[in-house]
Image (cartoon, rainbow, N blue to C red; front, side, top):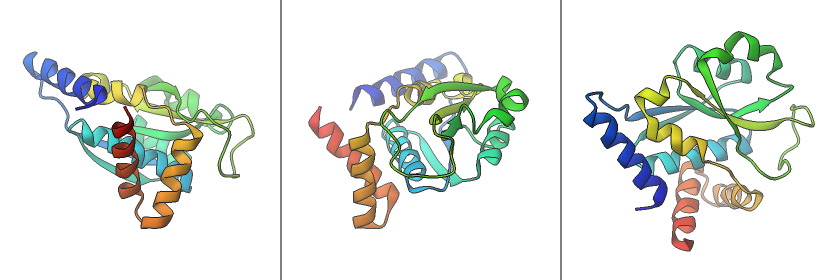
Length: 176
């Protein structure tokens, strides 16, 4: 069991010992680009390894903000900030945690996002009570360019982003 999986399991046990029932289902929202989908499936693979049931759905940027704010989703690893999200910050931010940028390299894909923007992980604030282990794992997720490129290549070969992400995680854990 990896360090991240052990941490998630310990936090879930602590929460259940305090009388609350930990949240086991995590709903991730992704953008529609290959880079965004790959990073969302990488996060799903890590969360699943820690014992969570994870779904990944895609939505446009405004829908991601609104669905997180409304509690219809738990987190997104593809909230482009600061410029692209400027119209949403004042309206929706009070119910969300910005866990910071999650991709540490230059962009792999050219797209609609402003030059200085980077994908951030945002999570609904209530996740810290419902699934603190998931929040802790999400806060620690940072992808290197090589990792994302590997998942994208594996996805191309297999045709399945979830399978590619699970293979990346198994490869990464084998290297630790």
